[in-house]
Image (cartoon, one colour):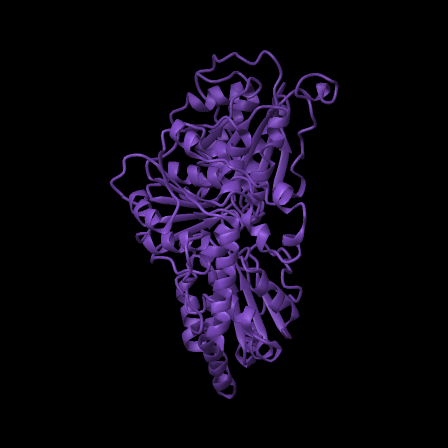
Length: 559
């Protein structure tokens, strides 16, 4: 049986018709018609997450695991606002998150009645589309409601994937659940159409005449289909391809480009600068590559944008290529090889390879950096690795990862919230061994991510607990602030032990290198029948010293 609310019936029917069947539900009374209708339909896979902020990120994990849109549904009032961090992350990662918020009738908004804040359009420019459904009283209302829902769902992918928001006012009585079947709702479909690439031959000609060509690959989902064509561009056309782990591409020969830029003088930076820059994908972890390219004498910068949106991260974009990455890269890989530039292209590529070969993985004493390297070097192949913000994602870039690793991080907004919830949601919807590497503040901030009944036995969490926000201690200038320990690094003595055991996670801890060797093996044991959390205790002071030691080693290697 379903709710008797016609807008709810229309929404449930259309979600099913569009194959959006993964639904994350947060409790409430105003959204109870939605909860009841979803939970009592066997075609929907429902997850119960109490904390709305966590629920939104949980849904992102489900999207990452399934490759399909997922919905998160909340009640009225501030519950809707708590979805904002996940909506923002979905916007920048281009993930199809459908945010559904129940609401009070519009005549009661801002009238000092309970939970009556203005919810319509609350996410602003962070969503591809925001719609406010009508209270359905007649056939015109029903037609309008149907159209709005279809439009919203289609805008989960309007050339650029991203979140949409459906706000659904519901009047009382709320608890009539006496409708036996869903209506035959009209379904509006929009087939996927590849964008034309204007003057492709002109781009191929321009590509051929440049001597120093670089492609920077930003964050991409696994199985992104660009690795093979990038290999061709690198091997045949001598293009320098720079990527980090979040790009999820196989080529790693220039993975240590951060250290190349860090240790180069002005003359070397000039030699390393590209004439033609091509960028694909989303965010890039390295700040140094951004600053380097912003100052470089780039003649042309082509950014491949499936939506056609203008993104000028490096402040020198000249062409927005409206195409999917694979199609455009295949076109230019067919370009003729200009023999007049072939030798210079080859030398440019060799220069980057030679410089990258100077640098190695960190060899340091017990610290966050040591623990990160030991984890990444100990992982089996074909796991799903989730990296929290700050040191977790930065340190991981300094190490190689096993073949077939799927790498994720909430870099769309690079916020502290949601890393735990996203990994938990991913593991709940995936059969992969799912490993989350996180710092202490990120973990404790999102500790509600483990407060649900969907914790999968394939989840593994490693917390580098250094007693505060260790990254702030490494930032020149900020590390001299008198407010650093009390208010910026937020020094603490908290442990995850009691909360992990309360949620039935196997709890492990390590306080030195010898213990860590043993505990990582136990944590990664595939025979474990329960999720495992390993808490690694370090100190901010030692972490800072070991990071400085590593960078000094690399400076010496260059010399």
